[in-house]
View 1 (cartoon, rainbow, N blue to C red):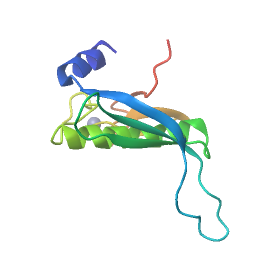
View 2 (view 1 turned 90 degrees about the vertical axis):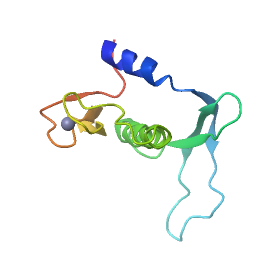
View 3 (view 1 turned 135 degrees about the horizontal axis):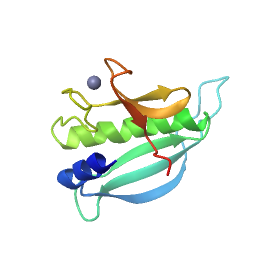
Length: 124
Ligand SMILES: [Zn+2]
């Protein structure tokens, strides 16, 4: 946990949560499917700059929604830092991947889950 906080400080992410609202799809779903329900979270600089949207699905179980949501934010951060491996896999050059360990949303080593995994949302 302390390493994560140090990394977050080093990155000094300029982003804040700018807006959270129910996402409304502007396109009708294909026949036989229903419109997905999700929460749109807009993140970006407090002033100026480009914001990004990550969607948290309300249609799937919490762990899956959290995993996909974390992956979207990770993609935005990696893009904005020029490809920096965030969150870093300890001892490896790649970032951790969002996934599931025993049904719990986790960051895990994409090469060997046994090497490293940690909860996406730590439990106190
Ligand atoms: Zn690894």
